[in-house]
Image 1 (cartoon, rainbow, N blue to C red):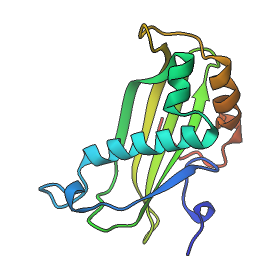
Image 2 (image 1 turned 60 degrees about the vertical axis):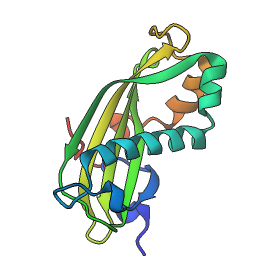
Image 3 (image 1 turned 180 degrees about the horizontal axis):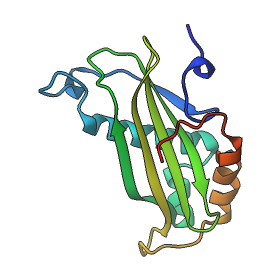
Length: 160
């Protein structure tokens, strides 16, 4: 079995979750519906945040959240019922004040094919008002140290 490091990731050291399309994920074109990929990105984003030590309960306690301002997905190849996939995510960039970017990549394991790439532009908001607010220290201390910086790149294959 291949390791995560042997896969064609766009950025180093992704946080990953295995995904396998089930019957309810398949649409009339007999492949995984694009909306499923969006749902999976949400799942891996939360799992990554929780693995780093920040859960929804933490966000609620400090009255801050990272809200998706823009989501962008490139659907490159179809996946089908039962395909073994690996979804990777990274915090790719931040101004250290208000915004961050999270990137995603979905790889089909049998042939190492990149099925989907995505990215979210995130803005820090105050939950109680919905207004943009500066990243709290709890966010900065957890998210910024794991952020992939352009100078850390070993591949130039990310979508721009």
